[in-house]
Image (cartoon, rainbow, N blue to C red; front, side, top):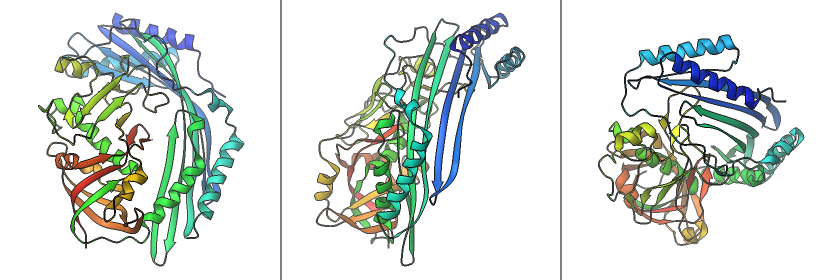
Length: 454
């Protein structure tokens, strides 16, 4: 049962903290409060491993002085003495920080209409026996679908709900509620002397969207696809990224569009607004208003309403993602992409980042891909150099036969090159948009990729 304080109590505390901050020398202040209830149940090889249920909350305050110094502190206590200590730490942190220009608070009000749909009342109807039963069913399906499965290492189900308050000295005061649910399966397969571990998962704000039986089947299919894999001869290949591999690439590319990275010269896109850096079929969007999106919310970490921002349009750089500080530095409006926790200063982050889907299905693209390599995992995308774009990535997947079926497992190969060249070589985007957390990918056909193998 939740033990969170009432909304009225939190609003009163937030108001007092803001007033006290201003009385002690701050020129601006804000308060961010978040609370949540969560449940997690999992099996390891069919036996209960984790069974946790609980609630938590966190409250944080940020103060800003006349020279743009900022200080932040947070805690999970609400007594007057503890709040006084937190406020004092917050003010001390402010004095110890460096002056900054362009720091500001949003001067608007919470958007009318409540924002995107992100709260599912059906989450409260999920009983604990249901969670256990879904994990048991995932274990059964994964165990029985292929005799080569030697271990269903993990089956898990988690769900929860949360509430967020944001209040500022500029008069902003707003609440929103959200929910989430997630399930995952990890299996180990064996054939001869070969072993392969793979998994699959799904997440959503809406419980009814999750298909836990599909997740179980996918985990086995992904392990079977690369079991016993070996490298192909070194050469130039066309590759087909599945949606999950494509999503990992989209996330890495998206980080180049964060205004904080651009300003600090940590992005190869600096001074390239309007330039073509990718294929004409490639459009990437960040959208915080998607119904049920895991990255959706009515406003960002600074109260700015979320929205839809096309950052790459038909291969051309069309926008960066901004919070208030970096929007002021660049002389543009914020895109509503401030990212923060109660104890952190606002940064810049994604909401729901995804590639705009094309017209053909995954199966249609595979049917015309004989001799190409289906890539199900790109390893090392976090090592892509954000300034030069150079990369060297490992891959897992399978060679696609003439009938469009991926059959020969492929592992132990390396893809090296430059990110701009890779994006420019994308020949087709599938229509099968799928989100992995808050990142969405589609099947991608990429031409003439140099790969090192045997």
